[in-house]
Image (cartoon, rainbow, N blue to C red):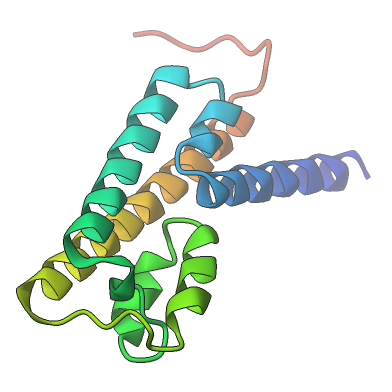
Length: 139
C-alpha cells in the first residue's frame, strides 16, 4: 500500500511540474526551486516567441493553414491556442520572408520549451529517486 501511494505521489508531482512548465515557460523549474534556471528559460523563450511575432505578425500562428508549424508553436503555452483562435478566421494574412522567419522563431521557441518541459520533469523524477536521509557513496 505504501509503495503504491508513493508512486501515485511521484506521478502527480511529475504531471504538475510538466503542466506548470507548459503553462508558463520556466514555471516547472521554479516549482523545483531552480529560480535562476527558471528565469533564464522564461526570458529566452518569451523573447524568441515575441521576436517571431514581431517579425511575422500574429498571422504566423495559423492552426488551419500551417498545422505543422502550429504544433510546434503550441508547445510554448496554451496562450498560443488563444492566438490561434483569433487568427483562424484569416483576418491576419502574412506573406513572404517575414512570415517564414516568424514561423521559424515561434516554432523554435515552442520546441525549446518542449525540451525545458522534459528537463523539468526529469529533474523532478531524479529528485524523487534520491531518498531523503540516504547516504550517498563517494569514491
